[in-house]
Image (tube, rainbow, N blue to C red; front, side, top):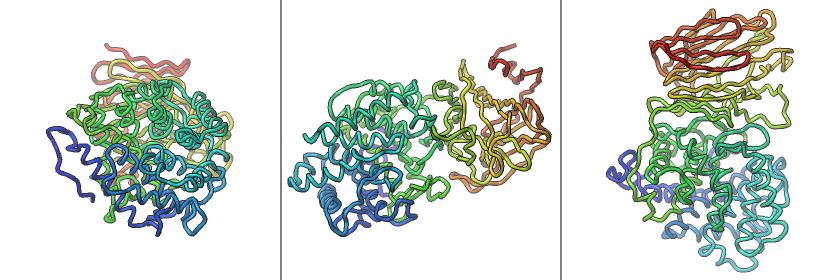
Length: 596
């Protein structure tokens, strides 16, 4: 637990948190992490599961990511605890020959994690220049520059990593050390951002279709913060504003972000784009609403065990949770959450901190056609129906057959996580006893009306073990959200003889999954998630041969509400108890809603 100042429910009626709480959390996280510092502070060797990058790289990560939190803390409110004295000593020790020398920055496929950390160090140095960089002697500055330039001379991963040399180059140019090499790194990153921008304020994290939290804590953060520090303006500022129009509605009333995508152990970093918008003014949100989202996200995790008895952020979601992690996750990885402290760049008299916390939007249904998302918020919980983000790399074919629970499910929410023992929110084709996985997703469209919306996609079911694809087999899926209710409709094409299909529901303590058409059996499977050890997944099963239609009604909570369905040819008509009708026609694909 972290000791915090008293709550202020007059200023912050929803969370009780103020700027003083953010300062206190930063100071206490830093103080706990520094107990694990190497003798000269170049590494913070935090305890816990090592990453695939090795212990020395993990220690550098501990230095870099906590340095970023310290930099935001100092740049926005001074350095009463002399954090920067420690980081200066560590910087010098890490960039000269000796026992604490940092590993060199290499290509991403050759233990390239130091390139990631170089961006946090460069950004921290830029934010704290008067306190740290300007106080180094010329030789020390030269050695720091030489280490950082490794990021400009090696190959980043083909995604948000290009913003790491961009950020290094931005720092070097800001201290008069720019040249053709720094200009090239910045131009290359900005050119790629134009390729990856898909509209409606959303970037793909690379050439494929990876829409996730990296939008906020990387793809928007680095270029917009660079603009802010250099006092320039580009199209990236307007894109952040547009992004926040919808992204700000992806937090639950309890402050939880969506449990969706990779690197979820970064936790409240999910709110960093909200903070950046408030600091720079590139936001559609009132200052009190921004703080409600920021503080809500921070408090959500602090109240649920994200910090252990040693005061350290754990590897997981609420508390430790191994399935949430990736191969690159190490003991200091959760300190990417430091990016949320960008809000401290707003001074104490800024409206972000002085306005009364505002209300978040109420229940709503809306679509994001550019990403293939359908968003459904009801009763304080946000659901995201995913018909467009798959995180399949551009060079991988349709047959990428490894299940990815963080992207491959049909739906995610702010109150549930995917199961890692049984595929929840999944439509599977079972052939010869092998269940298919959903990997590369092809969006087919999305739209919304008053209180309802839809999104659709297709995929080629992939199998492992065995041949990865079944010739001719394809699945087309449509999700329709009506208030708090869900219709899940599918057309299976080319199913081989004796194939079986399965539809699963939410991994939750209790939920609803009701057969409407094409199902012969149902059961329930106990499982665990990052949220609870006592979840259950409801499952429907039915035969499929050739072309077949299937439909189910789902809800995140128990309900006796029951629509009915009838099928004619390629059309599914669903009548709802309120007298309305939803019509899904697969040929050609159209989705309509009517009354009476």
